[in-house]
Length: 456
Image (tube, rainbow, N blue to C red; front, side):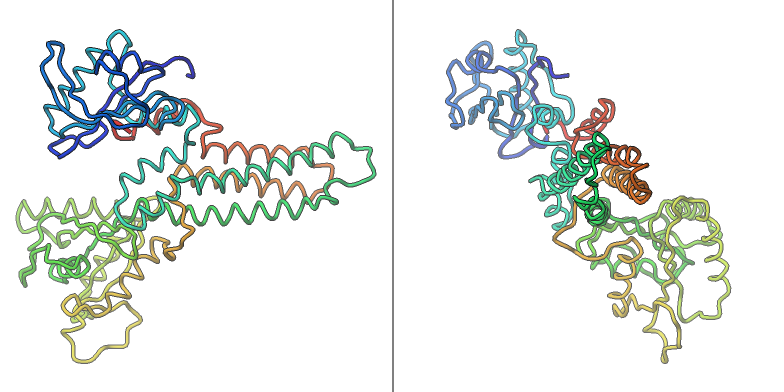
């Protein structure tokens, strides 16, 4: 894996028309290639205005060339960037010219995420930071951008590495006790091993909580509006989105298919889906829409079951609620159901109901509705300490916590279980090492970077 790698090239900016397009190359030695391509020697880290020419000396584009020699570059290799005019054809011509000149050097097109992968392999960034690059690009809220940026600067990695260091110190202490059993001094008691273990356990719990909040911020939630026709689902979607997205009429069955809109609630991305009213379809189009509604309901994180407060005694809604509960009972985990009573504006006296009552027409109750959605998905607050984590990070932290808790059980048994105590600490280290890439299978590494953009 760490042998000589062929140089790579890719478009680093988005494909399409733009004022500027950037092409990036990375390789272990690009100086000879650069001289053949531009017929000059570039000064490191200094922008040079030049014209890139074809093999027949015809100009292709004029732009800025920047050379970052290893190891002081993003990838840790020699890196060349050419900033030209951002047209699709001109960018393609530049890449083709580079591949032509770079053929003797085995220059090839980069795979998705290969620049970040080389930065990781050359110890310029760890795996959590590499993933934060992709997360920062994909972030769809200001809170997500802020959290991903913190992970990119290494905040998450620092906390993980501090835990690994503390586990190492405790392991050393245990090994010393095992190596010198004849000593009268109890190394573990003298060094307050139990207090050290307790601190690790508390810190790991705290990091796991922050990571779980970050995972919610990263993935958001799928919230589906379901219910009988004409209970106000489309009006609720419009009110939550702050604009008229869905057609609203008194006629039942207006919504024939799923309507999606992504909003933010307290910085958390929430994908709202308005579904066709659940009833026996009048025609083929509506029946297809209702089938898709049931599919979407089963995929949801949260289901807002909308009811009409003017129809309190309508048993049809109760039957539909029970039917939905049956339909999602086999999902793992099942979506969370929230009953929402709409059309508060249409009644003269508010009945005493321990229910969530709203008015899509006036906006009454929507602040509570938003809070209930966030509560259902487990979001607590926009804390400065939120870690923008992926599911694999959560899984690794959970495994690490399990091993640390197991270690605590063995520690309570005394010196006769110290070897098992030490082994659980080692397994906890292995789990945490997977987050930053200190311990990781090549297969998983390839899977992670293949999800990145080309040129990153």
